[in-house]
Image (cartoon, rainbow, N blue to C red):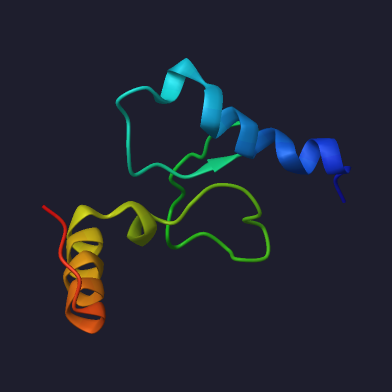
Length: 76
């Protein structure tokens, strides 16, 4: 369990850290950029990091296209 302050720390890190300047598409945890972990790792042992599919650029593009299609919204 984390305290309220510990729970808020990563959000504040993401909002204010110069490490993230001009960087997008990353996941953060524990006030840092999360590492990409091996997708074949034992799920019970893996409690840190992000799986590769979550930072895959092709997945992001498909999600963006589906979101535009379902909402009918477009951004320039």
